[in-house]
Image 1 (tube, rainbow, N blue to C red):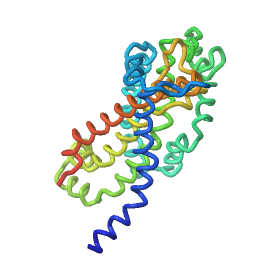
Image 2 (image 1 turned 120 degrees about the vertical axis):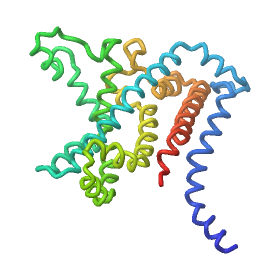
Image 3 (image 1 turned 180 degrees about the vertical axis):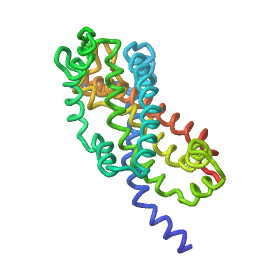
Length: 288
């Protein structure tokens, strides 16, 4: 009995934080999404699923959702693969390894607003760094952030540059925890580097991959800072992502009830992705 009580008391602080800052806000958001937005002199009234019906007929919502899925598809696999490649490189014995690790990790510690402003200069038409490079090949000037065809791709490139170094740290720590005797045994058996990576290293990295994947999915649906500085969702909603649309609806149009309904959809999407990741990768993570 005392042992059980001690266990619950140890869990109590974390449980309180989880309920206060996760479960209670989620339930509160669900509650407010079923009411209208209160106005001056008019209290909120029960509207049921009206906000969700309005969402189904909202073309900007569907455009934001489509953009977000494309954004996630562009950033998640690329940033994870790049992070793993960088970790493998800096884990080896090479000259200047410490400086290379610092270089890879530097984008992570830069403020997101500062990063957005740096890349804003890179994409500036006419005299930006990217324009200078393309000009060397005789290519015409292009408004990278002002074109529907390239605005979202620019945000994807910035996000990959920002996140790959962060994910690299986790992979590097996981690589350093792998016993060197495994590599020595594999070399004695005549296994090549690619075979050893595919059969030994990568399976041992699966718990880290699952952790990184969950974080990458969450990050792909919570981007706001870069959009505020670089595109503001334009042009013509070409770079509008779901969380930025929620910000627009809630804090620019002051339609808090509709923003709550959009937030619930975002929570459901993230929960579905997280559940799918744990179900599909569970057998690969818990190896013997």
